[in-house]
Image 1 (tube, helix red, strand yellow):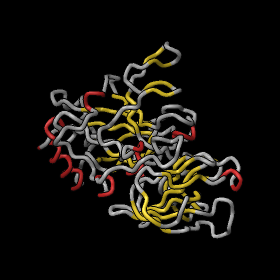
Image 2 (spheres, rainbow, N blue to C red; image 1 turned 180 degrees about the horizontal axis):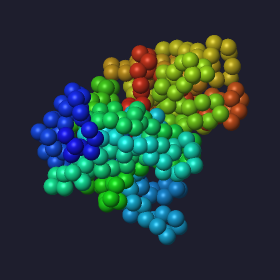
Image 3 (cartoon, rainbow, N blue to C red; image 1 turned 180 degrees about the vertical axis):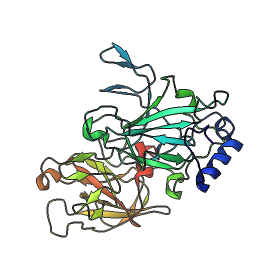
Image 4 (tube, helix red, strand yellow; image 1 turned 45 degrees about the vertical axis):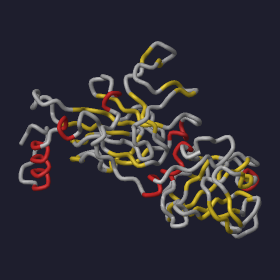
Length: 333
């Protein structure tokens, strides 16, 4: 088959994939809408406006001399990225052409318009992500890669994936998943409701990007690449008030560094659905009940221990699973 714009020859997986696409073309599979693109953003919500500009299609660029020909889909640094539809990968795509920390991406196409002009399809560029591969086939909803550390390049921006149709048309109508659209299932925790804001001054639970000490997303390298970060670092200024993300039972103290430094304190909260450790904070108490949103304590002086770091609360699920989905934008508050 040549209509997919890549030769199958005698490859069984390729032949099976092609037959599936023949039987269920995208306009039938997708109900007119793409699947969820970023974990934590099931509705493909588009970036609003911040000090760097706005994320909608047609927004001003280059001091009003240009227009935004893509759409910015909100996505936290380090989050998992999924394929919006089934198709053929190609890349890499360099958007900035300067090798910065987010200068990566790929193109996804289905089908080849030159060989199948009568079959409506899609061609899209997804930029500011690192794909698991640049070539081959991928299925709708399958893991495509991860979001790159945008905060490292644009501190304070609303982190996002740049989604651009190859013909530069507006992808906005396709970005809202239909009711029957398949989206990757979220863990039970995420379905039970997101947590409240954890730190005063950070109502959306923004996650630390990368600095000279490392990165704050779940799974970031630790110990010179020999380990992984099994927590999330929620940005919090030294001395700021800390709140309980959900209702539960306190226990502690919890020591992370075990050396008695200025930030070696924390507490555990266990509720009916969640169990989490909040570290680098001094709680008002180590035992008893606490309610969601209630004052839990204060942020300790992290700058005293790690000068120049992005001060943060270390948020770690008791089972070492990823808490990112529950922290997204403080929707639970």
